Length: 159
Image (cartoon, rainbow, N blue to C red; front, side, top):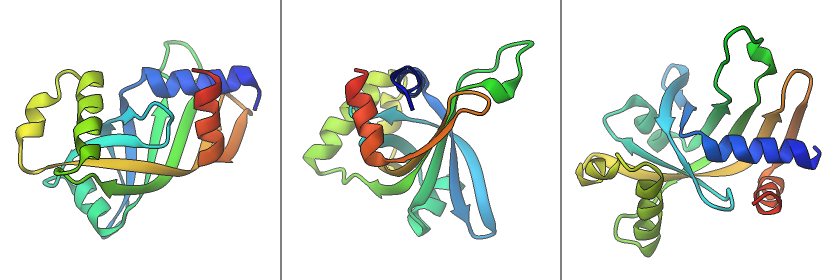
């Protein structure tokens, strides 16, 4: 993957706020839409989710997850040419009484300024999806598979 495609991927991740979340439910795969905030170096992706949601219960039972981020559709363009990235990994709960929680919740709220009231709800958890493998499609017939180390390196190179 060349530097221009790395830049496209990094810009895509940083410019979007809404992604499809894939989890494993009791009856098989499930997908839903969630807000996310990437950590600066892409070592994690923050999710603030309600335990009342099926996707959160799925994650508590099986921490494996995928996050799919896409460029927005444009009228009269082939959607298969859109840049998109799929981030696969595991989620962990960030403990509310930790210093990590204070820093990550602040980052989340700064990036999603309408989110602070939800941090007052008792049923919400702050989770971190830690990438293990990534698939980036820069457009039709331009697909790359790589690991978390390469993802973090792309974030640093293109900052």
